[in-house]
Image 1 (tube, rainbow, N blue to C red):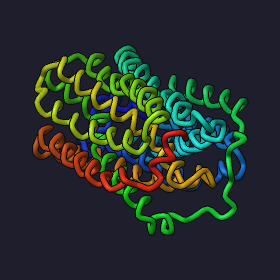
Image 2 (cartoon, helix red, strand yellow):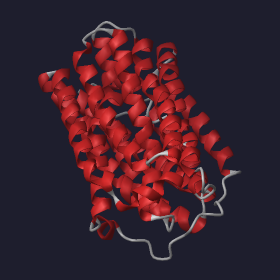
Image 3 (cartoon, rainbow, N blue to C red):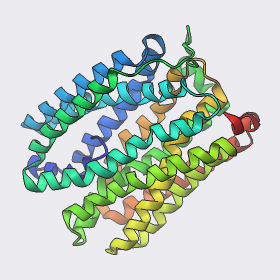
Image 4 (cartoon, rainbow, N blue to C red):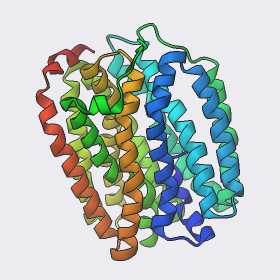
Length: 370
C-alpha cells in the first residue's frame, strides 16, 4: 500500500493544488515515521510477540486510509496517511522480520529473503493496480478499497503469527545512543541513511517523470511495480547466496548496484526500455538491501533482542525517507529532474563508500552459515 504512492502522486497533487515537494511529504512522512516508530515496536515485539502488533497494524491502516480518502486538505492528509499507514508499517514490518528470524537457524538468510519478497510482490501488483483503479474511479475510492484489503490481510495474518523458538528477548535493550557508539552500528546507520535518501526518490517520482515524457499512466506506474518485482529476485537470489558466501559482502554489492543504477536513469531520457532496465537494476540492489539488512544485523549483533536492534538501525532509513523525496521534489520544481537524479547518484555512491570498512568486519567468517 505504501510503495504504490507513486501511482497516486499526480492525482493527489492536482486535487490538493500542491507542488512536488509538498505532495512527496505524504510518502516521506509515512515511511520515515514507520522506521522511527520501529525503534519501539521492534522492542514491543521482543516482549509480547507479533500478534498484538499485527492487530494494531490492521486497525491503523484501515482507519488511516479511510480518513485519507475523505480528507479535505493536504495538511489533514499528512496526519491521517502519515500516522495511520506509518504506524501500521512499523507494527507489521520490523516485528515480523524479527519473528521470521526466530524460526530459522541454518537457513535464516534464505528464509528472510523469502519473507520480505512480500514487499516486492506487493509493489509489483499494487502500483499498476492503483493506477488502473484511479483511472477507473478516483484516488479517494482507491484508498477505500486499499483500506479494506490491507486491514483484512493484516487481521488474518495476526491469527497465525507466533514467536519463533530461536527468538531471544532482551531484558534491557540497548538504546539508540548506546548502539551508535559502536563502530559497526555507526557504519551501517550512516550507509542506510544515505542510500535511503536516494532509494525513495524513484518510488515517488519515476511515474511522474515518465508521464511528463509522454508515457501512459499505467505503463508509468508499472515502472514502480517493476522495482518491486525485480526486488523479489534480489531478495531471493542474494539472500540465498548469503547462506553460501559472505552476507556482508553481498550486502555491500547491493549498495553498489543501487548507486550505479541511477546512471541509467540519468541517460534514459524518454526511452521506456531504458527506464525498465533502470528499474530492474535498482530493484535487484534494493531487494538485496532489504533482505540482507536483518541478516547482517544478526551476524554482527546476535539474536539477543534482534527486534529492538533492527528497529534502532532502521531509524536511519527513517531519516533518509523523511528527507529524500521532499528534497528531490524541491530540486525538481526548481531545476528539473536531472538535478534530482544526480543528487540520488551522489547519495548512493556515498552510501556504498561508507560500507567499505565493514567488509573486513571480524564477524565476516561466521556469516557463511547463519
